[in-house]
Image (cartoon, rainbow, N blue to C red; front, side, top):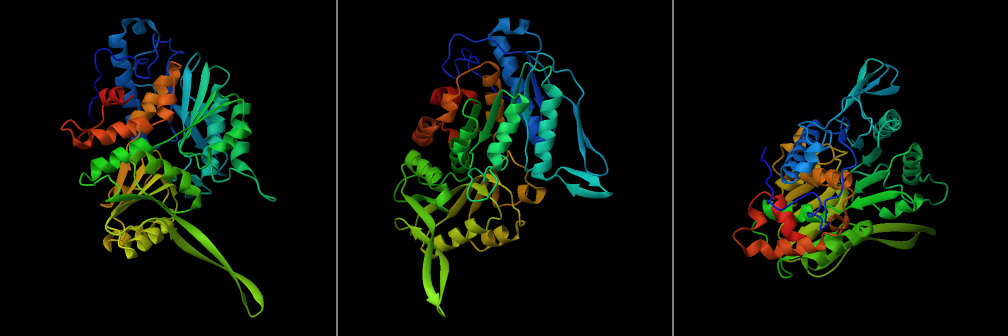
Length: 419
């Protein structure tokens, strides 16, 4: 794994524009048992590299107990009875620690035996394990931060008719247990924070990391209005696509569901069709932007419609990919030239068959998670992470330079230049 390097004058605070360096809120304790193990390993490695470098530049930090460690992870035991009931136990002390519980509720790669049969963990079970971990640590931890990249029940963000408002209830439950901060990424609708108006809820975008990875992976992309376009696959992702189009200065297209009503045998019948609204896509590379790839069918249908309109290459990027119906249709779409490549962050579990597919590329986020954890531990400002437009603009401007980040791994020096 590549080791990170920092400029000599860079500290945990001036990276975010805050001076002087603020105090650490106790030693960091990472609980990452619910994450895919490779992601947990990368986060710990990045955090350890960062803290060691900070301490070398600011020797006073070495006086803080537990500031520099090789491993910030805390051992926990999440086990289950044969009936499926769960229990949790923290095996290391967290007294006085700044505890960060990272959870991936989509991690169906985690399994357990129920009545003698191996079954995968469901999002509901992961959430209950999270509440158990909060209960285990609340009495002794200095603070508890929950980092849940994919927002559990995020699609249940509003109430209509006799439906349950699951996401708001989940947030109220966690803050009722005594957590201090809740962090997520690309929430389906961040207005769900209205359920907890006096609590610390942040939804971080992944747009900068997505654009960076796309340009690194396909370096011959021409980012201009004549050769590229951003498309939203549905009405719910319009605001996200608008941001991409505005930041990259590209035209925007939208797919929406057109509903027509007509009488068939004296019965009023509704028909629904997917309709495209936007400029011509002929000869252009198109990026379809969404927060979630569920089965992938919407991406495939939109990509096929764009190809019939003369689009060149169709790229699909999503904050999280579930592949709920497997990868057969996506593989066929790639083989037939409908989809060029699929991008998704590595913050949710991806099965091995996806990771080895030639049409799939991870958007790496471990570095950003380590950066976020370190910033929260020092109470650094998070506003620049929440507003990536300037960094995207400067990244695009740098494409013509030999030292462009499009041809190499991003370092913290790049981040400082872009802030």
